[in-house]
Amino acid sequence: MKQEPADLIIHSAKILSMDDAQPRAEALALRHNRILAVGSNDDILKLAGASTRLVDARGATVLPGFNEAHMHIFSGSVGLTELSLFGVQGFEAFARTVRDYAASKPDLALLVAQQADYSILGRNEPVTRHHLDRILPDRPFLMYAPDHHTAWANTAALKAAGILGGGDVGVGNEIVMGLDGLASGELKEANAISPVARLSQTGGRESLGVVTGGDPHSVTPEERQTDIAVIRVGLDYCASLGITSVQNMDGNLYQLEMLEEIERQGGLPTRIRVPCHMKNFMPLSELEEKAAPWRDRFNSDRLRSDFVKMFADGVAESGTAYYMEDYADEPGWRGEPLFTQDHFNKIVTEADHLGLQIAVHAIGDGAVHMVLNGYQAASEANGHRDSRHRVEHIETALPTDFRRFAELGVVASMQPTHPPGSAGLPLEPYLSRIGEQRWPHAFAWRTLADLGVKVVFATDWPVSPLDPMYCIQCAMTREIWKEGLPDQRLSLMETLAAYTRTSAWVEFMEDRKGVLKPGYLADVVVLSGDIEAVPFDQLATLRPIMTVCDGRITYEA
Ligand SMILES: [Zn+2]
Image (cartoon, rainbow, N blue to C red; front, top):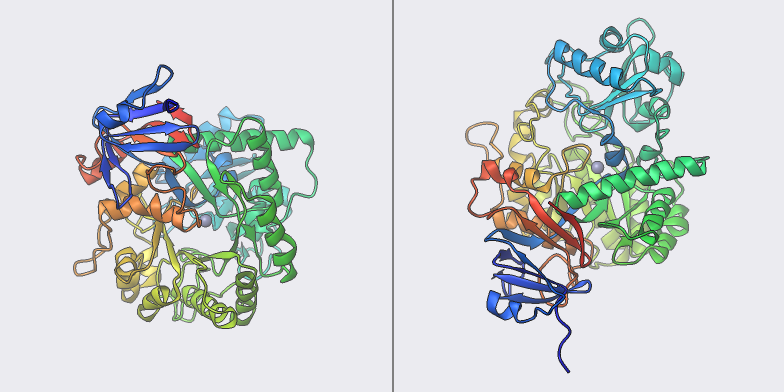
């Protein structure tokens, strides 16, 4: 009997398979949702039949589909419809951009802007509601810093949200007060931001996965359909960037069920993984009552919920990151962890006992230290297993803690778009905040990789732009902050692996995705040129021309 022909053959390509057994090839064939064969043009073209679609890559690079290992699909998708202040500097440009946007959206109850630099008005001019009132006196306006840990609201928005007079929003969160006894406009962390965010078109539902980990209290069928449509736009946007797998870093049942519905109605354009979020106010029983049953319910190769997400601290810029020693520019202040060590250890040990992977946001070296202590405690209590627990961001760590990542088998989840100086981010206030002593241990990709630690790369979208090629360019062009500091870049192949093979491994799916080899899932991206022939500072000019996820073409230029 003759073999069934391939559905799709991509030939005349420079395939970087990420498979050590056959790292380079010219062509590959796909059938159904699997890779049928990888090899030479001659061999692979023999698998064509009358119905096979042939794609001539014209010498361009073909990779396993990108696996974005840390992002926020719901808020990112909503952000696609809002104003971006990326690269906007100075009051005049800022005011003009916001006013133009406001004029174009006369009906929105809350105008929202993204990607506002902490120093949008200049280094020594912190944003207050008064600045925003000068731009938009009448309409509620909220704008987010790129990291989403700080936002600023004008007086109209603070009033409408009922927080102009301040309010208690819990440890690690703050409605910053001005000298006049009223809110200054600066809102630190999710609990402080959410009263304003709730006034938006999506009612702030996109941030619940981070803020409460719970579901919205009441959603009309129309609102739910709006949310699904928004997420669909975001998933298609992922596909257009060559992404075939998404590791979402916030979650609730609401999101999971919307994704399940998208999957039922025609299929998800990218694979997606969603965590159960564990907050410091949640009882330990949530793990058994939510995380474990979600793992059983959402366990396909396209939609999974199989890990726990937590926050150990906030961010450096707003002083909510937690360090072992004082902030360099703020003597007496180290930040506060969001959990006590003891509480954290209990949660981590229980999650680990249930066989769940854990991913914890930790920015300051104190938070990273606490997380490693927790993983060590879990390992001591439950015995060592192949847990692949992760630390997210790791902006700085104690020199003595890098080795512990390797010893404990902990994964480093890093974002090449985050080091100040990369991706258009200003150096200040960050460099002064952490201080020169910590610089050698900041964003230490190379240090960790050299110790044998598994490193995965991602963007933390919408914190940074989602485009993997831009992120890879940032990874390859990162500059040191000062002569003599270590070059923390990885090689191009290591960087690509951190976006494909290693990120599949961190999902426990290395037996079926992350490399291009026969039998593996058909997740492929075809680029517009040869990635090894392009100067590093122009990598982002390479665009995906075709994305295939699960054997289906999800994007074509
Ligand atoms: Zn994140």
